[in-house]
Length: 139
Image (cartoon, rainbow, N blue to C red; front, side):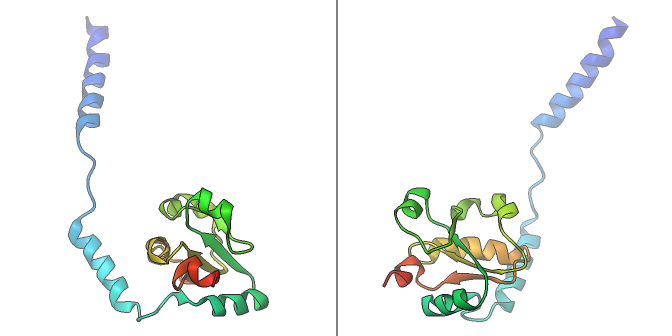
């Protein structure tokens, strides 16, 4: 009986720990971080036009992320762009250099702006979003 008590006690403690909810991020802390970011971001900060991107691609190496779904990327994309769906940018950080200009785009710029903000918040200060997205590139 003694040999069963320790394993049963251990199993009970583990089960109790597993059933407890994970500690959530404090909402006030999260709001403070986001507010700091929004207060520091100038209007138009982090935005690049298609003409600026085209000129920049001739002068320096730019890492371009097509943040659209794979089927859209396969149909057409900016030359040299890498496809990383906007929802998975943070899980694909090993693909994203931290020493180059990064330009993200989707069809309109709305979804890529979400990925852009996430990258900027974690320190990718050279991240930009293509103004009006791929539609501005293909005009």
